[in-house]
Image (cartoon, rainbow, N blue to C red; front, top):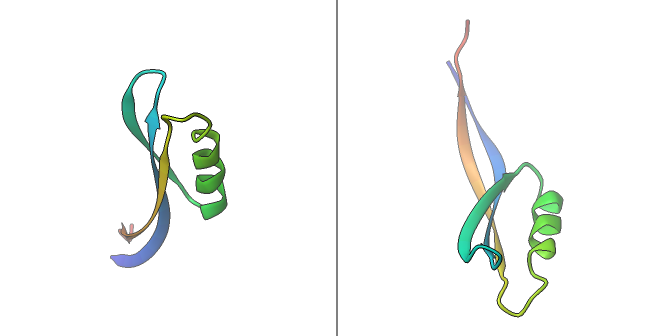
Length: 61
């Protein structure tokens, strides 16, 4: 069994169309920031990008 850390980028944002907070996961910071910028177009909209380190476990076959 092999364990390695992987960096993910989580974007939490407010979807004003439905009035809910939502979340998406991206592999690169650039993708996450681009997505966040698209959701910050109005006065009530906001988005936060968090860098998260996740340990993935790969089981040998």
